[in-house]
Length: 90
Image (cartoon, rainbow, N blue to C red; front, side, top):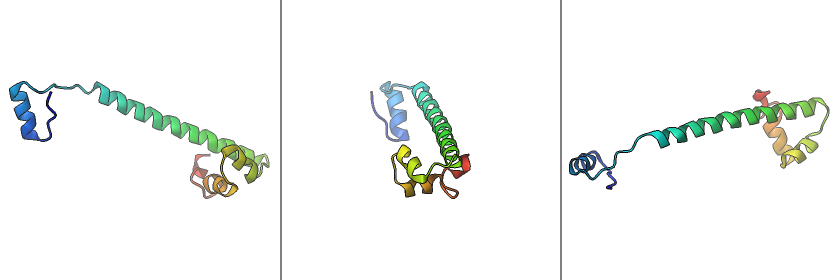
């Protein structure tokens, strides 16, 4: 099999019978997996944001939340506080 790098090489490879045509099934499977991963991550992020919001409403401190998240108090507040990256997911 020849790895074609430009249009003329592809044409020549087909003409010589030295080019293996590929279908898109693996590409499609990868794209589906990427989409599913993105959707799962969005759901997980929303679930985490809700859990943090519930903890805050119940009176848990940012220190306690940070401990559960495995980060600093400041990082937890920056991510999940009112102006945080995940604040709009709740």
